[in-house]
Amino acid sequence: MFDTLKRDLDAVLKRDPAVHSRAEVFFCYPGFKAVRRHRRAHKAYLKGRYFLARWISSRTKKKTGIEIHPGATIGEGLFIDHGAGVVIGETTIIGNNVTLYQGVTLGGTGKDTGKRHPTLGNDVVVGAGAKVLGPITLGNHVKVGAGAIVLKDVPDQCTVVGNPGRIVRGPAKRPEIDLNHGDLPDPMLDKMQQLYKRLSQLEKVLTEHAIKVGCAGCPVEDCPGRENGGCQSAAEAQ
Image (cartoon, rainbow, N blue to C red):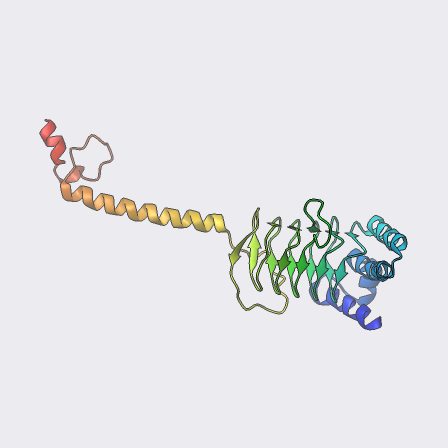
């Protein structure tokens, strides 16, 4: 019990630069309180004491703004930063050293019974406001951008952004826990830049061809062939 308590405290100390002491974490951090209360609720849930488990969960939500179903399985070192609006469903499984920011939902879809919530591997980081929905799996070292909606499995060490979530950065070796969730690629900007590059190349080819045929007499005002004596079709028309 004390080993788990120490790891939960250390998780906050290592990942939050604003913290100054273990006492500050223990008495003042809602994310830490929610995790510790959930561990008690989960024990009651596993023993079939469902009312007590839900009562602890309900009290925790009122005190911290974080709703964790007592049936959820949570590994060591979970860090919930700020925590307001975080929701974790009943069949969710969370690995070790996972980081969740405010507004994250680990939820289900539809009215299916059985496993209906996501599974998160170790060292996963889920950005503010992101939604991970359904019985999907996020591999180890996955990073989910703020506001993303993830509906499909994500392999290890990938980055997901957007709605619906798309993998924009493939498997790559990362630090043990990559908290830099602001360093994310912009897939739409990348596509626009690629399109602009192709259009520029096309304009260059068309300009070179127009100069070859000498279309200076072309009625188009900005025709690049005007300075080369006029185009043949314009001369025939005269």
